Amino acid sequence: MLRKLKESFFSASRKSGSSTDSPYPRIDDSAWVAPDAVLIGDVEIGENSSVWPGTVIRADIGKVVIGKNTNIQDNVVIHPNSKNGVRIGDNVTVAHGTVLDGCDVDDNALIGINVTALHHSKIRRNNIIGAGSLLPPGTETEPNSVYSGSPVEKVRELQDQDREVTEKMARSYISLKGEYQ
Image (cartoon, rainbow, N blue to C red; front, side, top):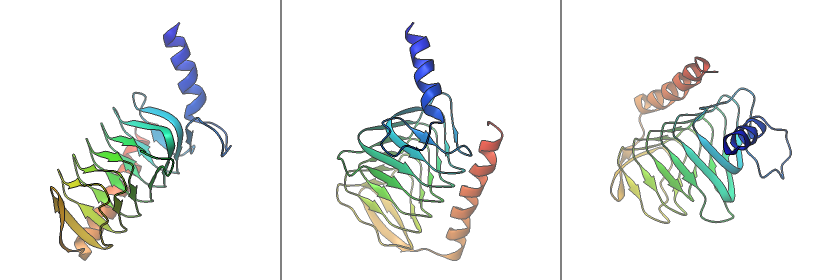
């Protein structure tokens, strides 16, 4: 019985209507969510985005909005810690094992493997955050920059080859999700 209820809930919430007051996930028809990803509450996923296996997006306290062409890779945890929610922009890569706890991510960011970004952190436009980095509460990065460390420190300004890597990663996951839809 529990399995039947779970299947019914997730099939109803995976591709739902356009109500802005819905407590259920709203996922664009062109997006892909792995069958074992868990989406709870007020989650919105934009066009051509993907959510990969083992990911948990729990929007029980505030809304989680994920823009277009964004990939949320395996075993990521996203959770708002206030009614302000979490916003992840367009063309963002959030790599495996990352935890985003009540923070915002602007467009064209690449967040490395196992990054932890704590409440009220802001990852700005055109940022790369190195693998294993920690953004303590209230950290705000500068746009067009590379950060790394625990706690994070600015390493350097973003270069053209960095932009190419970020764009290539977003494009590759748009293609990859097509193999699973």
